[in-house]
Length: 262
Image (cartoon, rainbow, N blue to C red; front, side, top):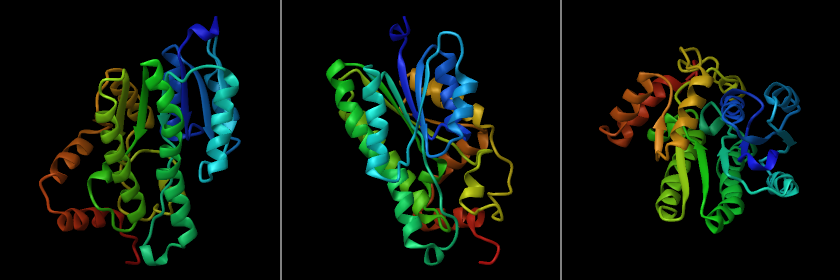
């Protein structure tokens, strides 16, 4: 029976790390519900559906509370408990803070901060009642350094880091685990969508999203608090950031994210 398989929800699953996370869950025996704000989900669902695996898709805009509740309604319609959720959807805004429209910053905060909190608030209590569940947050190595020229993005990931580790502590004796995965620059559509193609980081070598997703999935299943995913460079950068004062960390980060005109 399909319902004997565990059930996972993955947000931001139409491409990039989210697509590869969905693949990890599907190939490790999970039925999955995937969501994103675009029709590209059809291709993802078609690719991941295989013998014995149920893939459901929900097109929803997580920048709005209604979009989040649309996902929740789709989950409820399955009649199944959520065994794992990967809160992966995220967007970036590249450029000087003074140049970025307020509406774009508000949308980023809604997708990167409000939606994960909203979904966790709706999903985690049921996991606690059942005494089992796994929660994976996609953070970033950017969470470890102030991020000039994508300031709200780096700050949103710092929020996710703090929130996830606090939640992990609160849930330590409940049977519910919380893990964060910290990718570095990854070969996804992120830099194009954030208008950061012309920055040093945008044109640098990038990690394979499949490798990042595998690192995150394995950390989740092993109940690790966090994993710095991808290349050794990411691990060195994260470790080194702890040794520097904030203003020095900001200056180091700015060398990678500064647009050419600045």
